[in-house]
Image 1 (tube, rainbow, N blue to C red):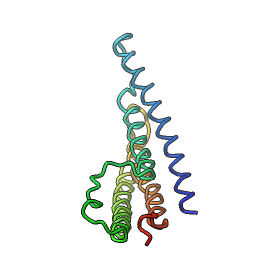
Image 2 (image 1 turned 120 degrees about the vertical axis):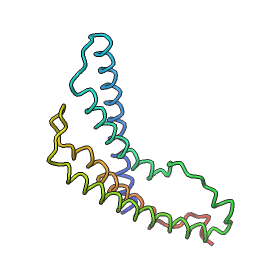
Image 3 (image 1 turned 90 degrees about the vertical axis):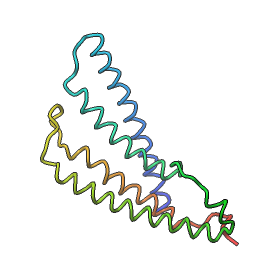
Length: 159
């Protein structure tokens, strides 16, 4: 069930990030057009694209975690040949990632709470809405990593 939830959350995250990146491209194209063709700049030209970029980056990271497509060195399999030991290191790595995400998400939540009553000048939106992307993404990514932690060991690690 956790694996299925993880896959669903990853799919939703991928769709959200894709739509956000498309929106970002449209927003930036419009701002460039407005600046250089009409010689006017929208009042939201900096804040709205930044808000969309932050949310798309953090939510897009959920899919990267699910697909295990984050950049990593991958040197351990060259040093350690025993599949059981590699599997143990993988489990420890997942646990450490979950702890790190929980700490990062908590700090992001505190920052969002501190800035919730402040508004962005051009958008009249809470500044905490920008910072809220971090705890939301961390919470979803924790679910993904919990699914990976508790999933069956890869076939190569079973003896």
